Length: 249
Image 1 (cartoon, rainbow, N blue to C red):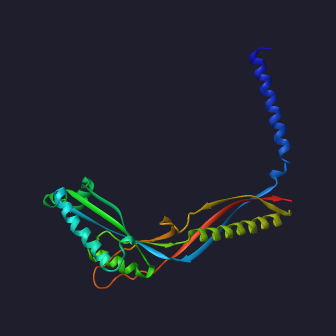
Image 2: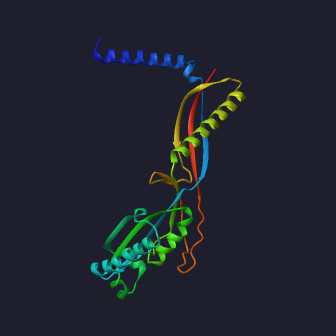
Image 3: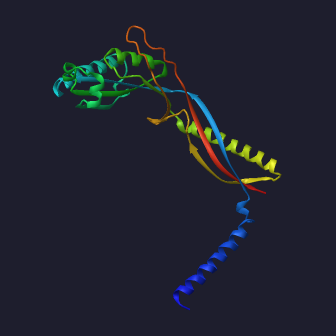
């Protein structure tokens, strides 16, 4: 028997074995399962607010743009720390000096004289950690001091693990209830939990910041003056989904 003939015979034997295994596994215990998805939701009041503030300035050259940025940067920081916010609660997140993008320049000013005064761009941004009831005050202070690109507020909880665990427990209970309904309607008895895997999101909670869970709030139409924006603390919502497999007895 040559090599080609032996290979053909081997393939035929393997195909036969595969068919036998498939037929046998139709009655295998591991195939008598119910697979479901369960969902759990937990909400909690925010423990802190993370306020995003920053500015954007233009200049005819790098030196003049930077000089204007130094003035604005110091004014914003002095105003924030002067209001009683600790420096440890103010974190610089970015500071960039660059040539102004041509597309941005075309959109901002078609006038040649104005374009000449906007050849360079400086941006700087910070995050401020504050109590939820101090968010509006901190935002107003920064904007009044020159932070002309500000407004995102994130509401965070300090113990995300507790919320995640509770949401997971609710999701698993929901999965068990759904599996029980399916079993009842199918005329079988629901057995033990075979496996469970957890997925996080998508949900209103947008990510992690400083060890906490947060929810974003955009602020638009900001008015600078004696009156500050009315910003209410948002509740943080955590959603979990569980994929669970139960045996059938």
